[in-house]
Length: 327
Ligand code: UT7
Image 1 (cartoon, rainbow, N blue to C red):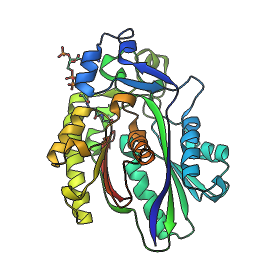
Image 2 (image 1 turned 120 degrees about the vertical axis):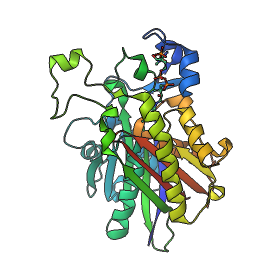
Image 3 (image 1 turned 90 degrees about the vertical axis):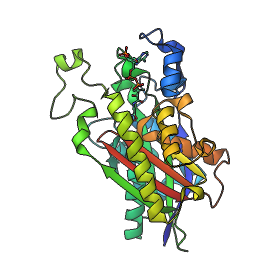
Image 4 (image 1 turned 90 degrees about the horizontal axis):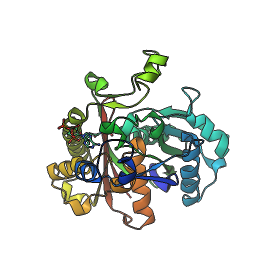
């Protein structure tokens, strides 16, 4: 038995916020944002649009592309750092909206590495329990509501969006997920965090006044750690798969910063033409970036049957991971 990607979908909210729009909010410039990050614009969810709403649109597209129906879905894993509520899980809210009565549901929180973790979790669950024949993996993020719009160090980086994949089990042994490498280092947890809103620091007026319910990041530290962790985990995944960089048709890195992506590609000796980039259009949508890339690439016919795709991500935790898919 093996696992295949049956269909993908993605959703970006309608509103677009350009770099020039941001120059009217904080002391920044299009030139700074473009040269330091590669980002030109990002999408921002409507006030009444929550993570499960965006997840719903992406999931419906993936279910359609997979040629299946919500009733056939056996499980939902939803990756997010910006859930509808602290609990219940946004996966349960999505289940109700999609109407997948027999699906198990849980949220998975590995920050920007969420989708890589979730694919490996879904893959392992499906291989170990034959009852789970179709599992929906979704990443959805409304980072705009935890963005400090007065902090130019962070507010230019993030965007909102969602992506979904339907994984299906095959009886012929054909397995799309051929290697995975996952890692974390909690020693650096405070370098990328939302300080308030949990049991450590509840939301108080003081926390609100100091924007402690928003994303705080030590950008330069995270930058350096991201490059080496992603490159090392890609190498580990290649070794597990018994492949070399020449066997990789596409590198799909987490879309946080174009400079990070170029440095990772350079360390792996993968030419930039084989690296998929859309950070210019969407910014950093945390766990959703890789899924949005994958959906765009599949819909545009860039990924061909039989090609090897190496996906890698890094984020809060700190967490990182890489997965190789034979499409
Ligand atoms: O998704 C999870 C993983 N996240 C990441 O991988 C993000 C990793 N970090 C980064 O991508 C980069 O560190 C940033 C894009 C966040 C920052 O780029 P940087 O080249 O590391 O800039 P910096 O933080 O060292 O700041 C350089 C200068 C500072 O000014 P001074 O102190 O040199 O005068 C900042 O105040 O740039 C200034 N600056 C800005 N200037 C204009 C910071 N943000 C802005 C801005 N516009 N938006």
